[in-house]
Length: 277
Ligand SMILES: [Ca+2]
Ligand SMILES: [Ca+2]
Image 1 (tube, rainbow, N blue to C red):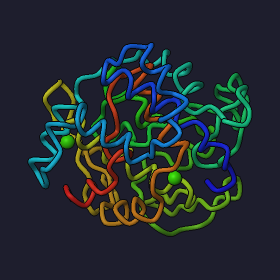
Image 2 (image 1 turned 180 degrees about the vertical axis):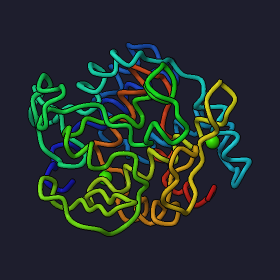
Image 3 (image 1 turned 45 degrees about the horizontal axis):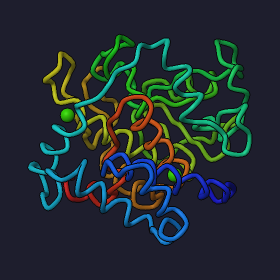
Protein backbone atom coordinates (compact mmCIF):
# COMPACT_ATOMS: atom_id res chain seq x y z
CA UNK A 1 0.00 0.00 0.00
CA UNK A 2 2.86 2.28 -0.82
CA UNK A 3 0.44 4.68 -2.48
CA UNK A 4 -0.99 5.57 0.91
CA UNK A 5 1.93 6.79 3.03
CA UNK A 6 -0.34 8.93 5.19
CA UNK A 7 -1.85 5.78 6.66
CA UNK A 8 1.12 5.53 8.98
CA UNK A 9 -0.21 8.49 10.84
CA UNK A 10 -3.19 6.52 12.05
CA UNK A 11 -1.44 4.00 14.07
CA UNK A 12 0.13 5.67 17.01
CA UNK A 13 -2.91 7.42 18.52
CA UNK A 14 -4.96 4.23 18.31
CA UNK A 15 -2.20 2.20 19.83
CA UNK A 16 -1.88 4.72 22.62
CA UNK A 17 -5.59 4.41 23.28
CA UNK A 18 -5.31 0.65 23.42
CA UNK A 19 -2.30 0.79 25.67
CA UNK A 20 -4.06 3.19 27.97
CA UNK A 21 -7.10 0.95 28.15
CA UNK A 22 -5.04 -2.17 28.68
CA UNK A 23 -3.07 -0.69 31.52
CA UNK A 24 -5.96 1.29 33.00
CA UNK A 25 -3.62 4.24 33.31
CA UNK A 26 -5.39 7.27 34.79
CA UNK A 27 -6.18 9.74 32.05
CA UNK A 28 -4.17 12.47 33.73
CA UNK A 29 -1.09 10.27 33.55
CA UNK A 30 -1.65 9.62 29.86
CA UNK A 31 -1.98 13.33 29.19
CA UNK A 32 1.19 14.03 31.12
CA UNK A 33 3.12 11.39 29.27
CA UNK A 34 1.94 12.28 25.79
CA UNK A 35 4.47 14.97 24.96
CA UNK A 36 7.52 13.26 26.38
CA UNK A 37 7.17 9.55 25.66
CA UNK A 38 4.51 8.76 23.08
CA UNK A 39 6.57 9.85 20.13
CA UNK A 40 9.28 7.45 21.23
CA UNK A 41 7.00 4.44 21.34
CA UNK A 42 7.76 2.03 18.56
CA UNK A 43 5.22 -0.32 17.04
CA UNK A 44 7.13 -3.07 18.78
CA UNK A 45 6.38 -1.53 22.15
CA UNK A 46 2.66 -1.62 21.45
CA UNK A 47 2.85 -5.32 20.58
CA UNK A 48 4.78 -5.97 23.77
CA UNK A 49 2.01 -4.36 25.77
CA UNK A 50 -0.52 -6.61 24.05
CA UNK A 51 1.71 -9.60 24.83
CA UNK A 52 1.60 -8.70 28.51
CA UNK A 53 -2.18 -8.35 28.49
CA UNK A 54 -4.36 -9.65 25.65
CA UNK A 55 -1.94 -12.35 24.46
CA UNK A 56 -0.39 -13.31 27.79
CA UNK A 57 -1.74 -16.90 27.66
CA UNK A 58 -0.42 -17.43 24.12
CA UNK A 59 3.08 -15.98 24.30
CA UNK A 60 5.82 -18.62 24.28
CA UNK A 61 3.63 -21.35 22.79
CA UNK A 62 3.86 -22.91 19.33
CA UNK A 63 1.94 -25.36 17.16
CA UNK A 64 -1.40 -26.74 18.39
CA UNK A 65 -0.88 -25.24 21.87
CA UNK A 66 -0.54 -21.76 20.40
CA UNK A 67 -3.57 -22.25 18.17
CA UNK A 68 -5.68 -23.46 21.10
CA UNK A 69 -4.56 -20.59 23.32
CA UNK A 70 -5.36 -18.03 20.62
CA UNK A 71 -8.75 -19.62 20.05
CA UNK A 72 -9.63 -19.18 23.72
CA UNK A 73 -8.50 -15.54 23.59
CA UNK A 74 -10.19 -14.41 20.37
CA UNK A 75 -13.48 -16.28 20.77
CA UNK A 76 -14.44 -13.76 23.46
CA UNK A 77 -16.06 -11.10 21.29
CA UNK A 78 -19.11 -8.98 20.66
CA UNK A 79 -21.13 -9.86 17.57
CA UNK A 80 -22.90 -7.90 14.88
CA UNK A 81 -26.04 -8.52 12.86
CA UNK A 82 -25.58 -8.72 9.10
CA UNK A 83 -27.29 -5.34 8.67
CA UNK A 84 -24.95 -3.75 11.23
CA UNK A 85 -22.00 -4.87 9.09
CA UNK A 86 -22.67 -2.09 6.54
CA UNK A 87 -21.93 0.70 9.00
CA UNK A 88 -19.06 -1.20 10.60
CA UNK A 89 -17.30 -1.54 7.25
CA UNK A 90 -17.77 2.18 6.60
CA UNK A 91 -15.58 2.70 9.66
CA UNK A 92 -13.08 -0.17 9.42
CA UNK A 93 -12.34 0.34 5.73
CA UNK A 94 -12.52 4.11 5.53
CA UNK A 95 -10.20 5.76 3.02
CA UNK A 96 -7.63 7.64 5.13
CA UNK A 97 -7.47 10.30 2.42
CA UNK A 98 -11.23 10.73 2.09
CA UNK A 99 -13.48 10.05 5.08
CA UNK A 100 -16.54 9.95 2.78
CA UNK A 101 -15.19 6.82 1.08
CA UNK A 102 -14.21 3.22 1.72
CA UNK A 103 -11.38 1.34 -0.04
CA UNK A 104 -12.60 -1.72 -1.93
CA UNK A 105 -10.54 -4.85 -1.23
CA UNK A 106 -9.79 -6.29 -4.66
CA UNK A 107 -10.02 -3.26 -6.93
CA UNK A 108 -8.38 -0.89 -4.45
CA UNK A 109 -10.92 1.71 -5.60
CA UNK A 110 -11.93 4.52 -3.26
CA UNK A 111 -15.70 4.78 -3.38
CA UNK A 112 -18.46 6.60 -1.55
CA UNK A 113 -19.53 4.93 1.67
CA UNK A 114 -23.12 5.25 0.50
CA UNK A 115 -22.56 3.71 -2.96
CA UNK A 116 -23.36 0.24 -1.67
CA UNK A 117 -26.03 -2.07 -2.98
CA UNK A 118 -26.64 -4.48 -5.82
CA UNK A 119 -25.60 -2.66 -8.97
CA UNK A 120 -22.46 -3.92 -10.72
CA UNK A 121 -20.26 -1.03 -9.55
CA UNK A 122 -21.77 -0.64 -6.09
CA UNK A 123 -19.88 -2.11 -3.16
CA UNK A 124 -21.17 -4.98 -1.10
CA UNK A 125 -20.04 -7.24 1.76
CA UNK A 126 -17.47 -9.79 0.59
CA UNK A 127 -16.97 -12.87 2.79
CA UNK A 128 -13.26 -13.53 2.27
CA UNK A 129 -13.84 -16.92 3.90
CA UNK A 130 -16.58 -17.79 1.41
CA UNK A 131 -19.72 -18.48 3.40
CA UNK A 132 -20.55 -21.65 1.47
CA UNK A 133 -17.34 -23.23 2.81
CA UNK A 134 -18.90 -24.44 6.05
CA UNK A 135 -22.35 -23.14 5.09
CA UNK A 136 -22.59 -20.53 7.83
CA UNK A 137 -24.64 -18.02 5.83
CA UNK A 138 -25.27 -14.54 7.18
CA UNK A 139 -26.77 -15.26 10.58
CA UNK A 140 -24.81 -13.69 13.42
CA UNK A 141 -21.56 -15.63 13.69
CA UNK A 142 -18.82 -16.29 11.13
CA UNK A 143 -21.04 -14.78 8.43
CA UNK A 144 -21.06 -11.43 10.24
CA UNK A 145 -17.50 -11.47 11.61
CA UNK A 146 -16.00 -8.27 10.21
CA UNK A 147 -12.44 -9.54 10.60
CA UNK A 148 -13.04 -11.25 7.22
CA UNK A 149 -15.80 -9.07 5.74
CA UNK A 150 -14.61 -6.37 3.35
CA UNK A 151 -16.20 -3.89 0.95
CA UNK A 152 -15.80 -5.10 -2.64
CA UNK A 153 -17.08 -4.17 -6.07
CA UNK A 154 -20.26 -6.18 -6.67
CA UNK A 155 -19.21 -7.79 -9.95
CA UNK A 156 -15.65 -8.51 -8.75
CA UNK A 157 -17.15 -10.15 -5.66
CA UNK A 158 -19.27 -12.23 -8.01
CA UNK A 159 -16.21 -13.24 -10.04
CA UNK A 160 -14.41 -14.37 -6.89
CA UNK A 161 -17.55 -16.25 -5.88
CA UNK A 162 -16.68 -19.09 -3.49
CA UNK A 163 -13.38 -19.98 -5.15
CA UNK A 164 -10.42 -21.02 -3.09
CA UNK A 165 -7.27 -18.88 -3.20
CA UNK A 166 -4.28 -19.79 -5.38
CA UNK A 167 -1.89 -18.14 -7.81
CA UNK A 168 -2.71 -17.84 -11.47
CA UNK A 169 -5.40 -17.38 -14.05
CA UNK A 170 -6.55 -14.51 -16.21
CA UNK A 171 -6.31 -10.93 -15.05
CA UNK A 172 -9.61 -9.24 -14.21
CA UNK A 173 -10.07 -6.28 -16.56
CA UNK A 174 -12.05 -4.43 -13.90
CA UNK A 175 -9.53 -5.17 -11.15
CA UNK A 176 -5.95 -5.17 -12.49
CA UNK A 177 -3.56 -7.31 -10.48
CA UNK A 178 -6.27 -9.81 -9.56
CA UNK A 179 -6.38 -13.13 -11.41
CA UNK A 180 -8.85 -15.98 -11.62
CA UNK A 181 -9.34 -19.32 -13.31
CA UNK A 182 -12.02 -21.97 -13.00
CA UNK A 183 -11.15 -23.03 -9.47
CA UNK A 184 -9.22 -20.24 -7.74
CA UNK A 185 -8.75 -16.51 -7.20
CA UNK A 186 -5.55 -14.52 -6.73
CA UNK A 187 -5.97 -11.06 -5.14
CA UNK A 188 -3.72 -8.11 -5.99
CA UNK A 189 -0.31 -8.02 -4.32
CA UNK A 190 -1.17 -5.26 -1.83
CA UNK A 191 -3.86 -7.39 -0.15
CA UNK A 192 -2.46 -10.90 -0.55
CA UNK A 193 -1.26 -10.96 3.06
CA UNK A 194 -4.51 -9.42 4.30
CA UNK A 195 -6.44 -12.24 2.63
CA UNK A 196 -4.14 -14.88 4.13
CA UNK A 197 -4.40 -13.45 7.63
CA UNK A 198 -8.19 -13.18 7.38
CA UNK A 199 -8.45 -16.84 6.38
CA UNK A 200 -6.15 -17.96 9.18
CA UNK A 201 -8.01 -15.83 11.74
CA UNK A 202 -11.21 -17.64 10.77
CA UNK A 203 -9.50 -21.02 11.19
CA UNK A 204 -8.42 -20.17 14.73
CA UNK A 205 -11.60 -18.37 15.76
CA UNK A 206 -14.06 -21.06 14.57
CA UNK A 207 -13.35 -24.51 16.01
CA UNK A 208 -16.80 -26.05 16.03
CA UNK A 209 -17.57 -25.20 19.65
CA UNK A 210 -20.21 -22.54 19.11
CA UNK A 211 -22.72 -24.13 16.76
CA UNK A 212 -20.79 -23.46 13.55
CA UNK A 213 -18.41 -25.65 11.58
CA UNK A 214 -14.76 -26.03 12.51
CA UNK A 215 -13.08 -23.95 9.79
CA UNK A 216 -9.59 -25.01 8.72
CA UNK A 217 -7.27 -24.25 5.81
CA UNK A 218 -5.96 -27.02 3.56
CA UNK A 219 -3.74 -27.17 0.50
CA UNK A 220 -6.46 -27.86 -2.05
CA UNK A 221 -8.77 -25.97 -4.36
CA UNK A 222 -12.31 -27.05 -5.20
CA UNK A 223 -13.20 -27.35 -1.52
CA UNK A 224 -16.84 -26.73 -2.39
CA UNK A 225 -19.06 -26.67 0.70
CA UNK A 226 -16.46 -28.33 2.96
CA UNK A 227 -15.49 -26.07 5.91
CA UNK A 228 -12.07 -25.57 4.34
CA UNK A 229 -10.23 -22.97 2.24
CA UNK A 230 -7.04 -23.47 0.24
CA UNK A 231 -4.36 -23.31 -0.58
CA UNK A 232 -2.52 -23.10 2.69
CA UNK A 233 0.98 -23.17 1.19
CA UNK A 234 0.10 -20.21 -1.02
CA UNK A 235 -1.55 -18.27 1.80
CA UNK A 236 1.60 -18.71 3.88
CA UNK A 237 3.67 -17.26 1.02
CA UNK A 238 1.27 -14.36 0.64
CA UNK A 239 1.42 -13.56 4.34
CA UNK A 240 5.22 -13.37 4.16
CA UNK A 241 5.38 -11.31 0.98
CA UNK A 242 2.73 -8.80 2.08
CA UNK A 243 3.25 -8.06 5.80
CA UNK A 244 0.68 -6.01 7.75
CA UNK A 245 0.58 -2.33 6.83
CA UNK A 246 -0.97 0.63 8.59
CA UNK A 247 -4.38 0.20 6.94
CA UNK A 248 -4.64 -3.42 8.06
CA UNK A 249 -3.36 -2.64 11.56
CA UNK A 250 -5.75 0.28 11.91
CA UNK A 251 -8.62 -1.95 10.82
CA UNK A 252 -7.73 -4.55 13.46
CA UNK A 253 -7.61 -1.84 16.11
CA UNK A 254 -10.99 -0.35 15.14
CA UNK A 255 -12.60 -3.79 15.32
CA UNK A 256 -11.02 -4.35 18.73
CA UNK A 257 -11.88 -0.92 20.15
CA UNK A 258 -15.31 -0.28 18.66
CA UNK A 259 -16.99 -3.45 17.42
CA UNK A 260 -16.01 -7.00 18.29
CA UNK A 261 -13.39 -6.44 21.01
CA UNK A 262 -11.26 -9.26 19.68
CA UNK A 263 -8.14 -9.13 17.49
CA UNK A 264 -6.67 -10.89 14.50
CA UNK A 265 -3.50 -12.31 16.09
CA UNK A 266 -1.77 -12.73 12.74
CA UNK A 267 -1.82 -8.97 12.16
CA UNK A 268 -0.17 -8.37 15.53
CA UNK A 269 2.16 -11.37 15.22
CA UNK A 270 2.57 -12.43 11.56
CA UNK A 271 5.25 -14.92 12.65
CA UNK A 272 2.53 -16.94 14.39
CA UNK A 273 1.40 -18.13 10.93
CA UNK A 274 4.51 -20.29 10.63
CA UNK A 275 4.45 -21.12 14.35
CA UNK A 276 1.08 -22.86 13.84
CA UNK A 277 1.17 -24.06 10.23
CA1 LIG B 1 -1.37 -5.75 2.60
CA1 LIG C 1 -10.81 -24.07 13.27
